[in-house]
Amino acid sequence: EVLLAQSPDVELRLRMLEIQAAAREGVSRLELLLRAAEIGAGRPGHERDNERYYRQALQTLAEPDERPVLALEAMYRQDQRWDDLLGLYTELSQRGSDPGMRRRFMVCRAELLELELHDLARAAATYQQLLEVQGGDPDALRALARLYEASRSWDELLSITRRQLALTEQP
Image (cartoon, rainbow, N blue to C red; front, side, top):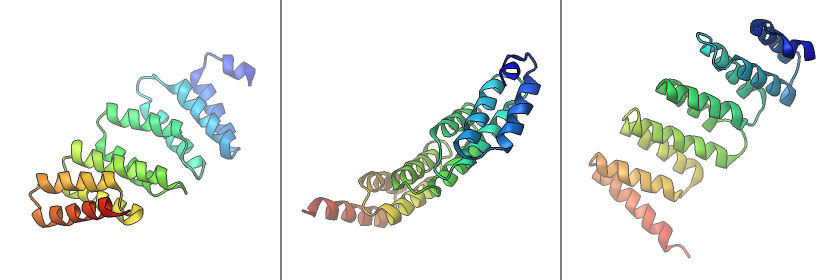
């Protein structure tokens, strides 16, 4: 492994890391895939290989690891691959047992829909899903109020405003 790490043949190093990763599970597999992505970073024409390493790393553990998530987010944002980023957020909002993590990615999904894709209806639907899961989430209620006001959906705005008032009246 030490000789391999010093080898100038990047392709050989990456192939060996892939073989090692395929034979491992859990954190060990995750670390090997992240190392492969690190070694492969910046190779012109091989961006899809790095994306594949990060995607595999992301699938390795039941709970998403932050490192491949951040790398994929950066990659997709840099290339303005909004549909891929939307798919990532959708996947992550449905994975794992941590409700805070799922909430985070639902909010990311809604913000992406609103700010980059300009799809206010789908952004509002995502915030509505968040309310179904999280109850009276004040951030989701504020976002929905803003979206409904922007789209002149007065009945929906009234309903959300009532929900916000009900939350403030609770002891």
